[in-house]
Image 1 (tube, rainbow, N blue to C red):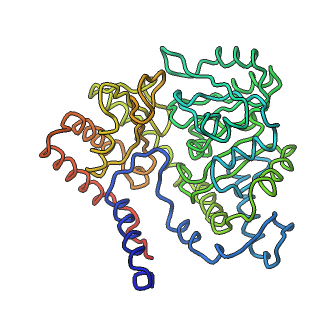
Image 2: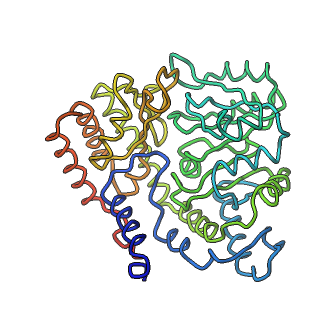
Image 3: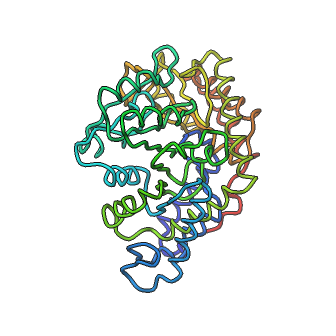
Length: 411
């Protein structure tokens, strides 16, 4: 037993599990994987080396691994309406790297959303591999609406003639119009890629427009709104399948994590169920309810609201680093985040990002989301009031006790 053989790790894992149980997770990129996903992750599938692809391995003994990975591929294709799927990428950034490696040459021009407007590090940040190896330019949002300005996107595309355009965000709370992106990409002869790491669950449940048939290639993580294991997938049109597969292996990765691939197969099946679609619809309802409550409390929401699972609050008059820490002390977890045209440092920016996937996984609905928003506002207004903070933490613990998670988890 781990408890006896390594009590230090046992105690730390137990403490982290309890933290997750007793906290309100509002980090938009976090969620609770299902028990079945966790079970597959802890199986002897972890032990197998399987460089290559089903039927084309460089190691023997993959007769069952081939069946598992093939099942994951077929389920991913069905779930995402894709012509081809590669389920081997270990992370979203690695999936994006594989796409660049497959379709582009070093130094080629790419057009993507800027980090301050809601983009991702792997979409051309100068401190990231993407910004070091490729020539990125970035579109932003309209200063008045804080939404994507497609006139600007088109103008930049016509001027820059990029080989790849990326439609993706990590902190943008509005719909991504893949059809408009496609029209611009076709006009300049560019590939169109969508990174739907955050909105994958919304896409497959029909509450967000689908990137296919407009996009040539789509990447996504498998945790976040999909509630699967940490990992990623690449989906593409069949004519790009060979390039994508070669970019992943042998281009960038060696042996895939077959325990994670098995867990991906489980989460794909779970995402096909009516109960999952009901869950995702509630995620969006909860997000809208929370955003409306913040607005009632006088907190400005970037772009004025949300169409998806997240929102960014404009707290430019506060110390967001302190707010994040004070909320952590009362078992509420979120992350500070830049806002469009932010004048503050990324280490202590003007905003905080809030997401509803994890609390919705606990069974919470609009009423509880409004209550949580009120608790956050109460803390912001009582940063030096210890009595108020104790009351907030008591309310948080009451919520987590009522809406439990992982009660059947055994390890």
